[in-house]
Length: 575
Image 1 (tube, rainbow, N blue to C red):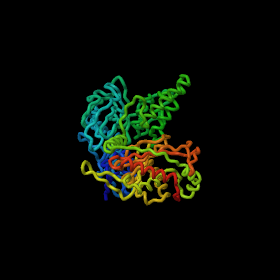
Image 2 (spheres, helix red, strand yellow; image 1 turned 135 degrees about the vertical axis):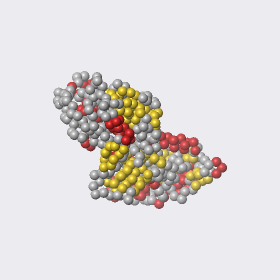
Image 3 (cartoon, rainbow, N blue to C red; image 1 turned 180 degrees about the vertical axis):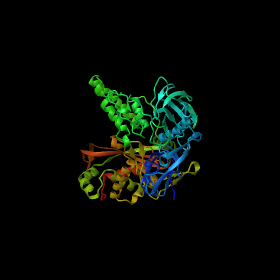
Image 4 (spheres, rainbow, N blue to C red; image 1 turned 60 degrees about the vertical axis):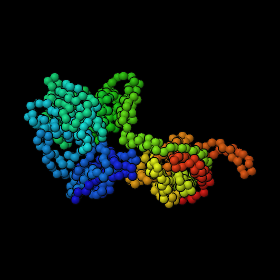
């Protein structure tokens, strides 16, 4: 029986998610609860498990697609005896041409592959209808997702008259879901460009024409490809010598003549004038990976000839190599190069939207207290080794701070409350439980996993929860319910050395506390008889940001005074 895989709801205010990566492809056998795909929202990046065991029979949305919650995104069929063998189906190509393809790879999981399949079909149909006479092959605007009906041509990578190879990047497009390079469907000469850069074109519209091999440039015959789509048998070209005087190894039957690589790898190679044929691939089936091309750049620098054959001064060669690797690494990792204008990631765009909304909704007020943490510092130093050995979790400062916050929230429930409604219908919701959000900084954004019913947990329970949520946040293994429903949030900005931060409230909370850096400093101490002494103490600043509509300045001050008192006079059991 077929089982639908749906886009889950990852939070109360989240109504869509973006598919960032399919971890399985059509035809793969999957086990129940095995990671099936990765999705991204403004709250969390997460792996979505398979709802049942079986075979992934259909993928309805490609990587990069943004999908509404409760939408069917894939289908899992029943179990088969040999999942590696997919049935063969007849797929109708354009203009009535029928091609035989494997059913499994026909459902592509990436926008680039989807575009390639679309273009391959049109190219094959054009070649067949022309009877192999060399008539032009039309290049069409591919459909990059079920809900996408147009794309904008952002850049032509070839100009009219250029010779292009099959699968070579031809132009770049941008849609509201994905940016992608579109490969050439056939080998030949780009004889006509019908849509200029900047034009927005409907899907299946002809944007260019590729003619037969030009008389001035001999284009090698395309090799048969090992993926979906129709390909002509490859003719054997005459042996040619490489720059090193060796004969190139002939392409194996049924394999691609050109090195296998991703659009990102091809872009890095193009920007640095690299010949991918000279770079050994360590990926699956010899595929050239990003690490392969960056390693080549580090060893030889930009250009197709290995550094050993080039004779510039060693210092200049090293500098050139470093610049090339830095530029390529920045492009590959998403870090912008100087002067580059880059779009926001989906998570960053929605974080930006939420931050602006929070500032517009809540009038933010801040109060900062300095806390003497010496008692806790000494306790931690004395107990941390035994604590980890005894409990299997490191003793950090966060559970002390979390426990003190929970204790204080019990005394001042207004700080744990939320505002609901609008205008004259505004009301205060006093929450039954303390659901403590712990902000976690990630390489790709920021998320707030939540310890639900934190008031019921022991110190050890808090320590384990903090460590567990932080680890699973960084490895994309959080569950949807673990990133929603917070009533109060802690954010540790002090790990970067700052005195304190002034954070934006995590809606719909009414307050957030920023933890400053821990440091030693001289402090004046006064004893019971009024005598002053100077001592070295471990101090830390804490900043409470709160919604002034619901929390008065006096309430904020009283809350922080109690929080300070709890930490400075700590006498709780740490387990």
